[in-house]
Length: 172
Image (cartoon, rainbow, N blue to C red; front, side):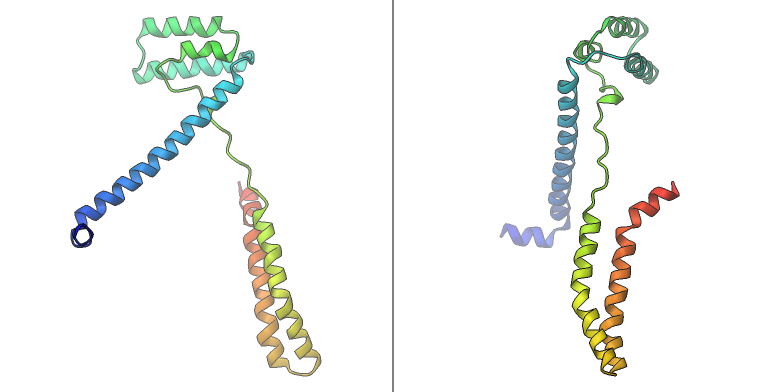
């Protein structure tokens, strides 16, 4: 009975889909937060550089501009950043605030899986291309075109697809 109500009433359908979408969003946010916490833990004993201190000052100034900090709290936290020696010392300065930008995970470099797919496409097209060559040798041009040309186009299309990230990188 409950399944039929779900089919008939679109508000129930959107509610469940909305809940699933919300759950997926929360899982992605939790994963992102876990990566930030792991980066903080990895860097906890590493000494701060002048550039990282400058980034922290900029982050605190931004939080002050947004209104999360008043002037007195800003000065207190700036003093904490100046006294900090390691990344672990910054936890007190950024308590209750978003983490500084250098804890954000770096985007992953594109893998070589597209080229692996291209190699698979070539191996898939090879028997058709060779069959087309055999037909061409024996004077069956139409059969050669039917077998060989789609294989060639398939390989060219997958090569273009596999090299797309390089073309996009050159445009930037």
